[in-house]
Image 1 (tube, one colour):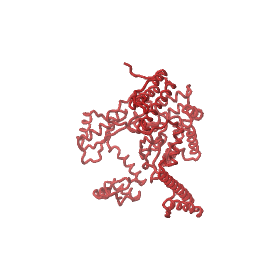
Image 2: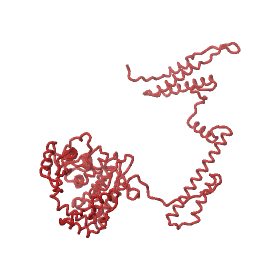
Image 3: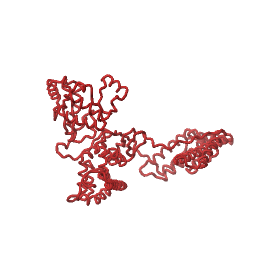
Image 4: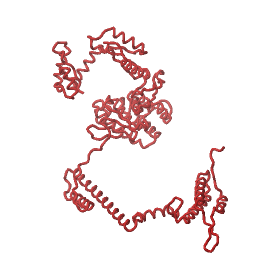
Length: 568
């Protein structure tokens, strides 16, 4: 049995069909001679068979154009004969029309459109009225657009435009609108000044497409956010419809588009940390970083190999005496150049770069690429960019053999956002004032899983800040219960070990007006928080807050009502 059957019609078969007779019925003419009248059902069957034969001829491996043309002519003749014997009605039940070329069809459609589709005298008049109404509407829209444009020019010039020229478009619009509405006057409102481009993004949202290559994602901006320790202030959003990347601005001011533009914005918003990424405090260094960034942008129109070789020829002389493009500190210049060569932070990307760069002893640019690729901020940025859709993670060259292979992700678990093997630290902070319950078990198993999968550390930190409720019995029970469920912490610590460190952070927050001292009763404090009301002490000066803080730390009775609250 054959899988496919290709039917072809030879020229002889076409000629044979032409010679074959069609089933006929005999009738008598007025002179008494027999005349053969075609049978309509037989003609219809013949037309269907011819149509199928033509399809088979066209779908064959080597279509015979002559056979196809002959079959088409025979099909048209059959349709013409059918219509002639069926009062002009074709097989499809519509009036039969002779076949036309594409150009003839266009001419006919155009003529029908002009004459109103052949609807007679009344139909033509209706079509003309409709076309006139459409023309009036179009003219009104054009005039309105012209008036808006003129008004916006006047508004942008601060009202210094020519009053006569400003009135002219409005008058034209009014006249056209009056014509379209049957002569009634229409008032035209002056449009407001142009607003900022609207954005669907919320403030501080960074959106990009998870399906584009890594180098086309905001890897430079993410690296700057991590270096300046401000990445926690921004939310990453996956958007499959976006072609580039964008950052939503506060106060509905639109969005910033482009990786390098977002990176510069993040660096400038980060204060001193961001200033070092942009070149430092001197104008010369800042200009040099800008120059490198512009150079990296200019390379984007070339292919990868050309970009890599161009960067290699430019950087090699500089890297003989320095670690980075600007000497011995990582700046936006290095990250922009790293993105220009494809952001090769993963194993497969670096292998491709090694195939392009010249082999030999000590290629400075390859050493520079290895240095940047191993930087923690670059690796975390890569992991964030790759894992935006929560279904993938990056793989890096590892420093230790035990980090080589991570176990497959357990069913129901998600990839750890920004997780890098050997760098993950999780913690479980129980209070030794009771025994563990199911909620504790869920929390510690989750933290333990990620610490083990990413070859990190699990810290069990006893929150021993309430001595009146805590006992050694609970502490020992917690350690024993953790062992029973297979959890063995790498480090066991106590919050009390860090009281001095916590105190220094509290003083730093007070001096920077990030915290204040409050003696509001607990019930009233809770009510104010639910009603989103500020405490009466929120605006106190750092000096007053420091005085109350020292009073609280002294242990005196009058210091007990006071507590430190962060300004959130």
